[in-house]
Length: 256
Ligand SMILES: [Ca+2]
Image 1: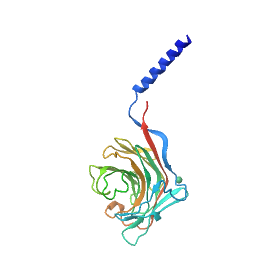
Image 2: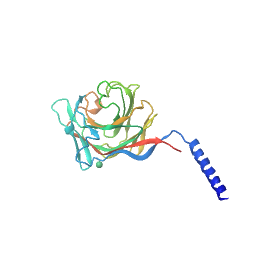
Image 3: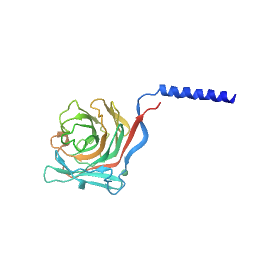
Image 4: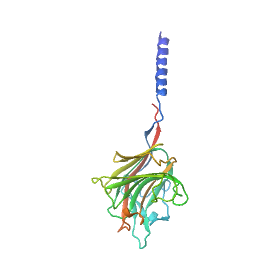
């Protein structure tokens, strides 16, 4: 009798297992495991984890001297300049990441004339030359502190800031009660067919066009540009992008 009971139990388990298998789908979910986390608690950035480029574009010159950590906060500064080219802090991860949830807690100092950005991008070293890159952006224009610009790019040719194209989808979210000069958490969830954007946990936009397909590196950059009216070039003093932390959680296939 004991053996018969075991067989019945085994058959039951097999049936439950098969039902779970038959019901599974390809939905991607957040795994819950943090795949990458940077708290900026060290005195300087790890050169193992972060690249700090040096090149010029538009009206900025990426300059590692504009990057620092203090009190657990990363500071990217846009400094003074006697020309139309301003020194700025630009960092990006050496490692590329796949589908998942990307988030950062940030605030920006009070001064028109800059764009602070939290983004992910392919081909980081080639995007400003001959690359055809994929990218997802949060951009905070310091002259418009109550709005947030979000963009997705797929196989984009040419440089950022150009004309809207089929490879480029963007949206400006605005709320008079919101202020980029206070701490907020910016997050985008990158799926194969869409990108959901969140501010402080509230979904504010979904892009289903120009969705990236290739692994991307995480980047933070403050810059300025004279051909974008809303930016109100030139900057009238030093502007700082402050980041408390950056995090990436990988998506996994839903098992049930
Ligand atoms: Ca921190």
